[in-house]
Length: 624
Image 1 (cartoon, rainbow, N blue to C red):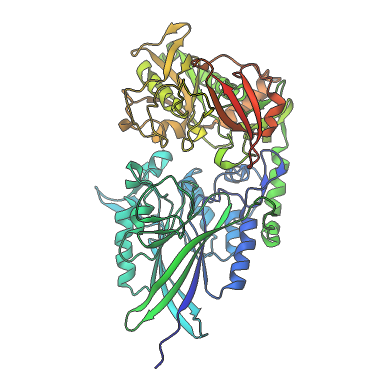
Image 2: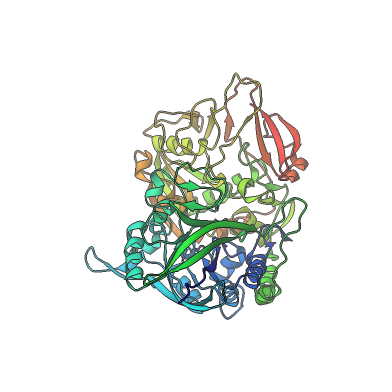
């Protein structure tokens, strides 16, 4: 009998779609060029036309991330039927998906109700219902699924293959969505997946694929949160599909390890793919399988790649799929009608063009609204005797998310669209009791956003560290302080404590008085920051800030109420923080070209316009 021919298989992947169905920015009210499932769908159809054997998977963070998703979760659109993300994925015939941590942001009941109409399985082997004693109960999702697929080999013969698929998500999900902890527990990803792989192999699977809502990192977080490196090393695993960090792989990454081949996407000899976020890319793993007598099929060779949906220089973006546009049209139109409702007025512009290097009117507006809400909530309690502060961070600061990813609310009438642009996440409100010592440590974390500048350098130096996200740059209003960026940062780019003795925060004062370690404050913030993401004990907070007030009210609703009751609002800016002068050191930073209209902003340090970068950002040179 002649030996069967090799079989070519293409695995397609999406991840971190975050509800982005079509390439439309509901916060700016304009079409955009950032991806979307409708563009991905066009690529999926092209791959299926060109290749006989394909599979399509998603790695989570699917149901949260747009204004539409928020409105659906709150039942404010009046639409019925399947969640539009699930309806669109059904139309594309996904083979399986894994949940992501943000899929739980509206509560577990909403998630399970939404995926009930999926015609493909959601898989996760490490999230369990709470069981008796210390033992985990049953898993919240199917632990794995064995897909039976009929594929054509290179000579045209058909073969039946058994493909084992499992998924996993970070244990930190119970911290980020703390409301889950009462009902669920999460095992470590690597141990849970190892156990599942053994079961699937024992059941005769020809191929085993891991859908990991997890990134590719080395170091401390790689042990629990971003475990792709370890998952790829497990025996019996043929492919790992990752996500969570919004990174793209294969491609340049800030990870150095001899087992990683950034050109072919191989990690420990296993193909790995991570396709960015918002449908920016379709991930591909191309495999050649060979049949082994008495042992089924094995991977003979493999390589990963990414196909962009958005426009590269001198090219057009991938066209949006008409079927997805049709499926999502009722939701799209209902969203537009809802977000165009007026809520108030602003006398000045509110934007995030300068949020990472100057005092910011938009950020201070959010802080004032939070402070007013907290002041009313704690009136008459013992907390009311404490100095009240308010922490706010900019959520849209361009950088890896692109030149269009900035808040911009022009002067004049403000709609719900503008409110969502100012505060894009569905974060509930929270308040913390914080000592002066912990407050300084918190600010040191924020100040770690900046590169360390050499005061003696003549050439301009980059102002920001590439890996430190803007949404972690908390500005705490109600105190004043300087940031000395000639000194080393206390935290590394991943927010991990690196040097507890490093000190960038100078002249920290409240009401003109120097803040001492034993002073106490109550600080308005959000639940996402308060529950673990900002203040894990191992990060050096002494004492760890104490949660003293929580509300299910979203910060966005607090901002809505503030506009309604206080309009028209002035774009007043208090001098909260400043860079400690370094004698004229030059630092470069990129922002939106729309910022040119506001270069006379009164709180900016001396700045020069260096023109636009190839990516479309405006490059500024600050004098510090």
